[in-house]
Length: 153
Image 1 (cartoon, one colour):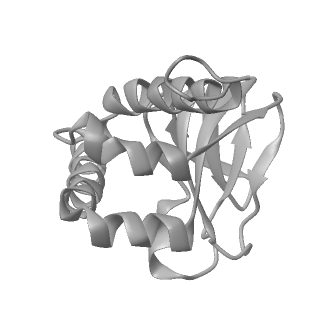
Image 2: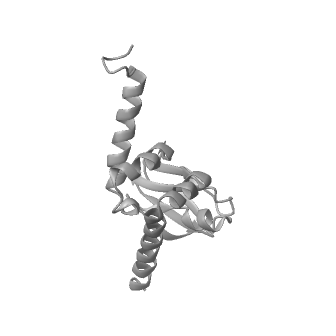
Image 3: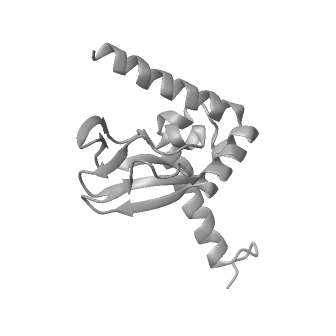
């Protein structure tokens, strides 16, 4: 059924979901400085994923095809049975293997129920080509992580 503007209920539902996605992304460090208009195709490419506690997001040695952003919950990176880093809301997860097109150097385990945003590599690369600010934000976020890691030593 269409409204007086000729849009169907399915179209209105899709647009409302997309706008919720835009506002959710707007609050994440990876998307700082990007306009709502720029975030529309990003929100369209993003897939929201809910995962139970104790789940393995990926294992060390798995191919890094996916990038995740943790929205809710906690996760840990484990190498050879040793926890080497922790992730919380807003953190990128799996970015090294994703960006390098390599295998994951660690396993990531969820410590609690979690909600994540997932991007497939090809989709994310297209978005970075379309929006250089996104690629710059990736560099900025990774630089902050490196700097924070150096401070804690």
